[in-house]
Length: 353
Image 1 (tube, rainbow, N blue to C red):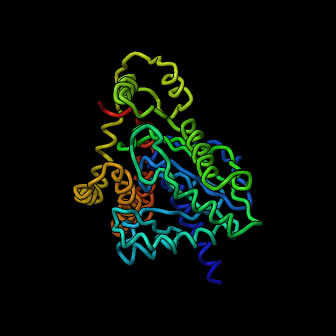
Image 2 (cartoon, one colour):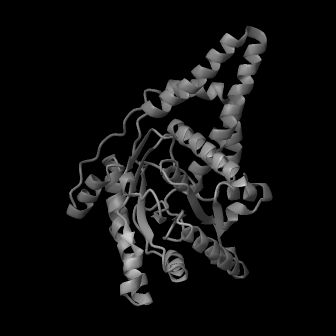
Image 3 (cartoon, one colour):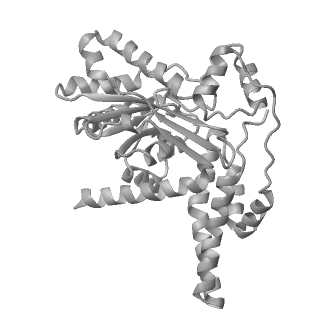
């Protein structure tokens, strides 16, 4: 009974997140879902440019029920820890969390082995941390330890490793276009059985890294990185058109500088702001405590998805008390409709230089 209720809870939250992301993102492009096996153990290896928004976008548009490894400092508060655990999130500890905490990862690895043994799915960020840089950093060995550890313990299990690239037009601005691309399955059992473990680790890392560099925009991390990025931003390219942008980079052939698109819906933004004044104040106060730019979208989304519906409902109830249910229902509908119109119709420019 508990497992049934947990599944209903997970699926309900997933549907809610999926709907709410459409109110938050200008456009969500999803491709490669046909690569995801309907059954069997799967490890999704994802690049990590935008904190907790990345797993939300990947899992909301993924047919499988997912388990996640996320940075341990998110789990500090007991209530948040329980809420995240109920949605299959698990903490992974890093050196910056304290060397004494690293021992806790042994228990987490065992949980991961059990998840894969049950032929379920796991989401991991193999770069080991988040970064808004438009490239794929060297991958850590942590994810290979989980894959090959599970294969060692369970000879009858095969794990499909699927790289996933997630690309934002401008991850710090609302709204932004998002492109999620599921890559091709990598047969980890074949790699593990045909090579020594050190060689298997290198091969798996290289295969995942190679796909990720094609599944998202990859500007080589060298002395030309900033120049290329500035050139692309000045040209106001659509970074979610990944193949085209990567072709520009490979051929060193870039479009001329282009003016940013004018946002003619700005008056609508101020109307929404007036209608959402108290949630906006909450966001402004909380935003002062954000120390990493990668968490701007995460905190903004969290405030939007909780505070806005609550205040719209409260304001609708006030209107119901004075003017009746028709007026209250009309207000509630129009409030969401205006947000959706602004989200979907506002131009999404590249990052500011």
